[in-house]
Amino acid sequence: MVGNTSQTIVVAGGSLAGHTVVAELDRHGFTGDVVWVRGPEGTAPYSRPALSKELIRGRVTDEAIRLPAPREYGLRLRIMDLAVCARLDPDADRVLVTPAAEAGRETGGEWIPFDALFVCTGMRARLPKGFAGLPGVHCLRTLADAGRIRERLAGRPRAVVVGAGLVGSEMAASLRSCGLPVELVDQGRLPMEPVFGAELGRFSLERHHAHGVTTRMPATVTGLSAAGPEGPVSLTFDDGQETTAGLVILGLGAVTACDWLDGGGLDLSDGLACDAALRTARPNVLAAGDVANWRNPVFGERMRVEHWSNASAQARHAVGSWLAGQEGREPPAFADVPYFWSDQYGLKYQMVGHARGHDEVRVEEAGGEGYPFVTYLKDGRIVAAAGVNAPRAVMRMKARIQSEGTTTQGVHA
Amino acid sequence: MKLTVDRTLCDGNGVCMGIAPDVFDVDDDLVLHIADEIPGDPVVHAQIRQAVTSCPVLALTLEE
Ligand SMILES: Cc1cc2nc3c(=O)[nH]c(=O)nc-3n(C[C@H](O)[C@H](O)[C@H](O)COP(=O)(O)OP(=O)(O)OC[C@H]3O[C@@H](n4cnc5c(N)ncnc54)[C@H](O)[C@@H]3O)c2cc1C
Ligand code: SF4
Image (cartoon, rainbow over all chains, first blue to last red; front, side):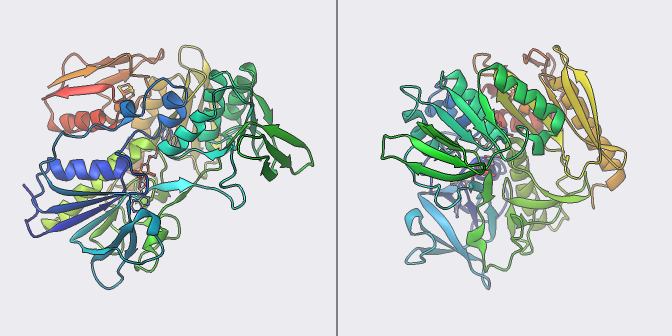
């Protein structure tokens, strides 16, 4: 049992990070009140990675991807769905919670005082103005987005996927396996090149072509227009060319959802800035997941990680940091080697570490099929590794980066 | 601690292996192997719980 019955914890965000914070408070037997503001989606937490994989391909139902929750929490828990945290008081420990549709307008709502606030509001899809709201044009961040895309799949329309990052590349592969003709467009030369570099980018391009996906790279979309609700979407490109599609997926990345903290006295320059233990400049405000920018001692750098495993690990850690503070202990740093995977055409791309700023790349072969296996070095030290269908080799690198990073940087950095 | 995996769901994404490498091992055919003997170490038990709740396809079940 931890905490005391007069304390209130507010958890902002109803996805993996928020869900894990609540589960951790439950596991520790927190005796105060927990107010869980789950955000605008109006759904119980679910597996976001499944959206562009199993769910789009119709392999699983919406219910099958709900995150496991106890039938009953031992907590004094108030769940607020279709509600958002709209403001943090700069002078007092309280947040304004409003109905989702009212967000930003600041009429009504309820100020909730807190002893701790966990910010787990993640990210939302990046949607350039003028691209949003057109019929047949969709981004993919939420279950609702996935539902809208699935409604368009009957009749197998021609699909154009704009943006060949992780989500765009996965969507091209998933839509192709649903039988749609697919074109994949990116400003860069190769899919996922900013993530994996040229070697795996080229490998991925070959895979798309082998499966019949056409690519247009480098190309920039300069215009989008729709001919009515059911009609095709026209796309124009920077070189003057045009094409039409029955379905356009915008995979243009995501932006952090922490604008609601503006004016709350916190550093929001890239997500929500935290110390190494995931506490912000207001020590009873902590962050976890896609939104959290912290100093990772394994790399001696600030970073923000937009991947699944990170959100659950940080959520646990943030709860631990707050509890340590309650007991007057100095919490440990969150020293972690990021990990993610991506599924495309039955292949598993996996990456560990933090490749930004690397100055050397080594390419070998690994795994059963001998696909390319890339290690990324900075100042002679391995900082990241990526492979295809080579989980053992990738995970060996994770352990190595973790232990070498921890020795060189020290965990209490 | 009894740990089971639903193989119809597991796609070998290695999230569990990243969290608890002493317990979970995904081979190059993307098949998950769970250690026969689960170490008694409480740190490993915490990792296992985290792995179970983090599995993105909800394939793991733990009976404590
Ligand atoms: C299509 C897709 C596929 C992906 N595939 C992979 C993958 O294969 N591997 C991988 O490692 N990662 C993948 N990811 C990334 C992974 O899903 C994220 O890292 C993870 O969801 C982050 O969890 P989070 O809880 O930090 O934030 P989010 O999942 O972004 O959740 C934030 C939550 O906060 C809510 N919210 C927003 N604003 C407010 C507010 N003001 N008040 C209250 N609540 C609010 C939102 O509605 C949402 O519920 C994928 C992401 C997408 C979109
Ligand atoms: S996390 Fe789940 S899906 Fe991934 S390898 Fe482990 S059991 Fe399988």
